[in-house]
Length: 208
Image 1: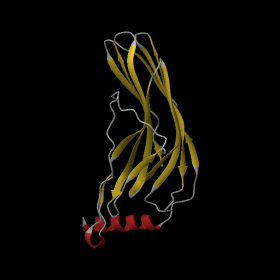
Image 2: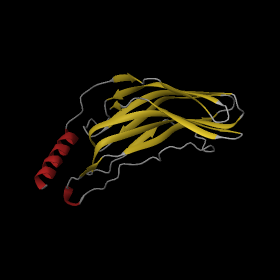
Image 3: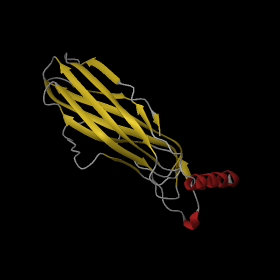
Image 4: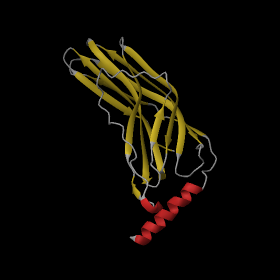
C-alpha cells in the first residue's frame, strides 16, 4: 500500500509541475432532443445544441482543466393549457481522482448578467464540490473522483415557446488527477391543469 501510495503521490506531483500541452479545440455538441405527451394531452418538444471550446489552463499545470462553451436550449408546448413551465441549461462535470494537496475546486461562471428564476422546480442534482484539505507535513492524498452538477441559466416560458441561450460559459476544475469530462444538459418542467411533468436531455460527454 505504501509503495502504491508513494508512486501515486510522485505521479501527482509530476502532473502539478508539468505544464499541459498547448491546444485549442472546439467540439460541437451532438444535438439532443426529445418529444413526449403528458397524460392530459400536452405535446412537448425539448432541444439542446451548442459547442465546447477546450482551452489551455491559465496556470499551465496538469491538474487543472479549463474551457468555455456556447449553449442553446429551446422548448415548445402544444395542446393542453400550460399553467407554468421552466427551461434550464446546466453542466455536469467530473474528475477521475481528486488530488488532496491543494484545496480543489470546480467553478462555472457565466457573468454578472445571469439571472436564475427558482420559482418552478426542476429536478436536478445539487452542485457538489471537490472536497479536500492541506495535509500536515506536505503529504499527498488521492481520493476517488466525484460527479457534480450546476445550473447555468433558466427561464420561465411566457408562451408556448421559450429559449435559453448562454455564450462564453467558463468552467475550470482544479486539483484533478487523470481524465476529466463535461456534459451539458437541458431540463424542462411543465405544469398543466392536471399534470406536472419534466424531462431532461444530455449532450455527449467531452473529455477536457
